[in-house]
Length: 318
Image 1: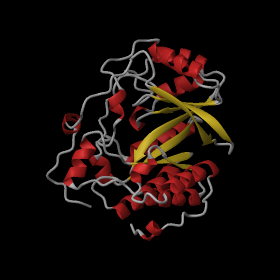
Image 2: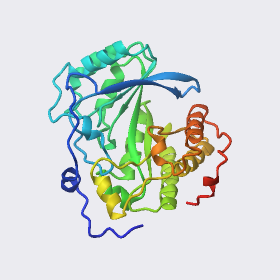
Image 3: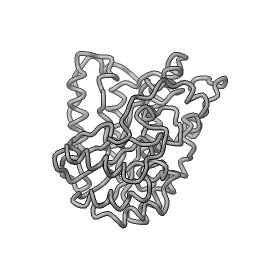
Image 4: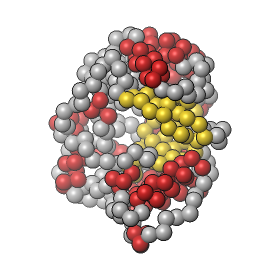
């Protein structure tokens, strides 16, 4: 772990390190897509993802870049349902929907409670709906929304890491206990939960980051989550670029991602996925990157460890 005692990481420093937000239309989602995902039942099905445009998250996490596609004002009632309707009209019909709003679905400054009923109506033909939330915002509003839904509700939350020192520096404003308590609340009320786990944390070596990612997966499953997603940390949000320039952060290697993914799969305690967005960014070897991306995708869908990629870069030791 690096010596970073001279750096005060807080809301002020993180926000001051930013560039400009993207120009987004507050009346439309800033993106949508359909991807294959292995479901709880084991089938591989199309899942629609709608990236809703709304107010910036009140938590300013060190590694987050989702603020880039947010507004500075609260959405008025009706705007979010209209965004969902707009995207669903353009996507093929799917039975599984993820509503990602660059923050927390249960943040009422982002998603007005008045919109829950209309959102639920739009999703009535779905089988599952997955939303994201900060663990500290898990409360009775989750149950209110669940009770309006025909599909099954799943909630994804960022655990990030159980290394308490690093978690504090991420400015997440939560503890592992907060996460575990939120999972317990959801489980008690029949709601599946997912955990986001970070790989390539600042202030840690590659091997330390692998270790803590694996321990965090252990903790998440012990807490009761049904699914873990491993997310390699990226630069590009201002704060992470500054840490990279200081030598406090380096991009994780795709070999490390494969290793942690394999670890999670071998536990056989629930689904484990690796985030596959822009995976080539994490490769030091141009010869095998296409094969490695194909392998990670195959493991995500099959939840089985496939043959390793044969390349000289396997000699790289973390």
